[in-house]
Image (cartoon, rainbow, N blue to C red; front, side):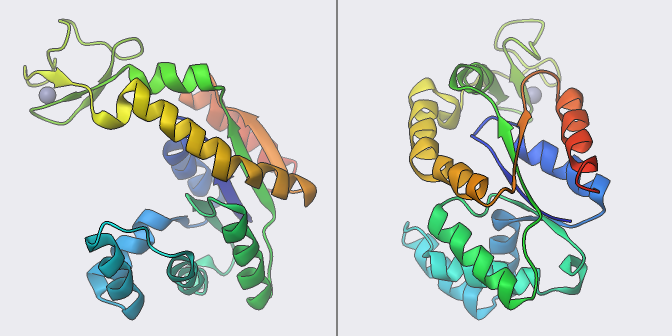
Length: 217
Ligand SMILES: [Zn+2]
């Protein structure tokens, strides 16, 4: 099965991607992993991407798409894959359709993890990170016994910039602007499957796997 997973920040996409890919016995392919692999192996695309990243610039779509193309052409992806973090925009989605057509295949399903903005803010803004061991706690869902002190190592907790309300609001606006149009794009292709991504992680996984069963996954 060839699957794309989309959802806003804080939807639990990375976690669900692991479970769903394991269930389908397909590789989980994230652009982060592809970037790191290309950069560490010093491929021509990796060298090019690193030049942009070192300059603090966005890696152009063309470079990203070529990396995705190389990765999807590897043998382990021939019977299926789960893409996490790509495509993020409609132009990237069009490019993905084209490169899959070149490989003689197409996407089967685009799964959207549906979480409303209030829930995203509640999940992300409650996160606290330990300065000592790096463990991530949550003021509501995974609290420490003493406020702002890590139960594991006794160090102080802090709120990462990424988890501050203002940053979260900006990320949600960016998601709405760029990624949400993907939902319409794939909806028009009849490939979109929405999953309620609220509640416990295990419940979301069950809903996702149930939905895939009806597509033979
Ligand atoms: Zn700690």
